[in-house]
Length: 250
Image (cartoon, rainbow, N blue to C red; front, side):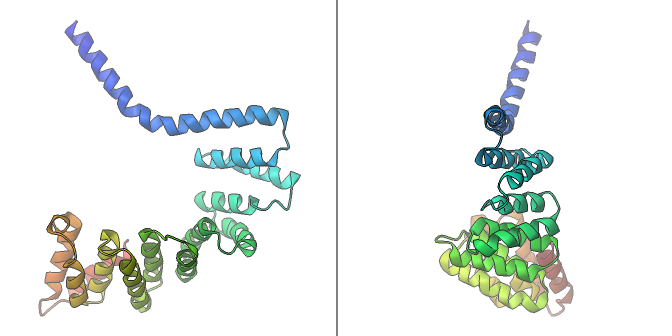
């Protein structure tokens, strides 16, 4: 009896652990089924087709999503947003060239669409065009009423990906972000990494000094402190190379 109770308890615990992960997909499946039933009665409803295609994208069913978006184009070739839906789908599905064409077309008519700009930035990065990605992130920051700290990080990292000659510009983006979000840890970390990569130990130290001891005790910050102390030594080239590799691996 005790063995049975133990097995039952473990089964319940397993269900509790797994159900939250299953809920989002189950919820999407129910919504997709509901839209499919509706479309049986109105098969040419483009808004329902777009909505189902978007849900299929989120459900990680790109082929089914493409079918819905293709049907939208057949019914309404000049639909205002289908290029965005298709562009985002193709970028996320590993086809950035196709996605870029759709997003370029959509952004011609909607140049300040923040999400489409971020989707295009991702496409540029996948196509090894970091400066174009940086331009898109910079535009998102300009048009957003409340740009998130992650946008500044993404903008700076795109400039870092363009090469060491753009590190100074990347650091400028970080500084602007920190003026808006003083003490923001991820931006402070990125600024520290850029400073260490160019052996600017003074700036690295000043950024580190803005953080509480509880943060500096974390492994990633201990690693940064080790690089900072290493670069203070007379022979620091190996340390600078390690800092550069760490930055470029982000």
